[in-house]
Length: 310
Ligand SMILES: Nc1ncnc2c1ncn2[C@@H]1O[C@H](COP(=O)(O)OP(=O)(O)O)[C@@H](O)[C@H]1O
Ligand SMILES: [Mg+2]
Image 1 (cartoon, helix red, strand yellow):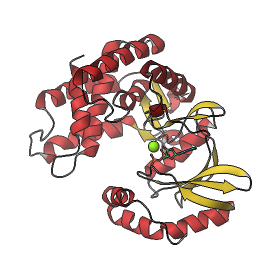
Image 2 (cartoon, rainbow, N blue to C red):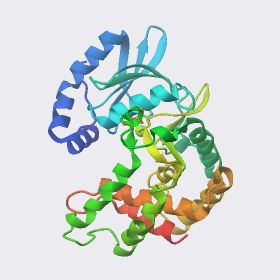
Image 3 (cartoon, protein in one colour):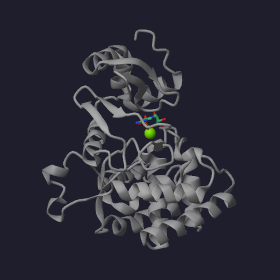
Image 4 (cartoon, protein in one colour):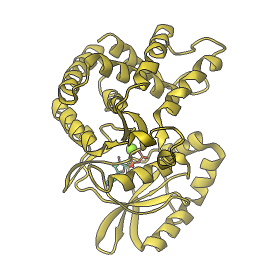
């Protein structure tokens, strides 16, 4: 695999997200692919058409169809591998092999691989999403919930993610930059209460319509981040996806309302809390996407403001 011909958008993503490490990663990728291919006896490695933050490829192992995933080694990648191990194919694709130190792992290929985003009936999408998320949530024994508990050390803490919002004001010299002040203040005011929720679980952490795929075993999740926190967070990425599909505010609001009532009825959560989690995640997502010049988070902020008005 010397001539990779990777899409330039993918290379740009990796460079922007991982700086020097990302540059190294792209350079070493052909060698990493060869190494993984030899280790696991892979043939016909072809990358998927929608590469974003990791190298993901269709491959064969003997007669078996598999997926090879290679990422820049970092804590989130380890957490993904550990979450997949814990799910053990239950509600999620099966992890077949992994080498966390080298940043690569092998997955069961989901066929046909239709994404939830490919369906058009939004109620159907939401109901399927609820079925799958409930299968993958894992109880965290209360004795091991503490930050220091070593069995949970390997997973991402939701409190760490939301802690990043504290960087917004220093970034804009005490102001809120592109973040509407009222919106940020509201999220800051209800966040402690949301995070104090007792319903702590190991959740997927990036549960949206491009990470739920149809397989011969039914609908399954791929690409978990492996996050420990209140299960309510799981609906955040779902509520703002499929990304950019509705740009008309009143249609978006009508869809959000329907989703909220389905989620509330099936999960037994108060609609008010669903709105709060959706708003909090949308603001966090905007922060992650905001570039140094202040642009990038527009879509998520637009969603957050619409959730506020539900
Ligand atoms: N187990 C799988 N079976 C079939 N297709 C997959 C599988 N895992 C990933 N893909 C395809 O590769 C794409 C990117 O994979 P994903 O793990 O979501 O990467 P990223 O971490 O970069 O988002 C998915 O949207 C899907 O189209
Ligand atoms: Mg993904």
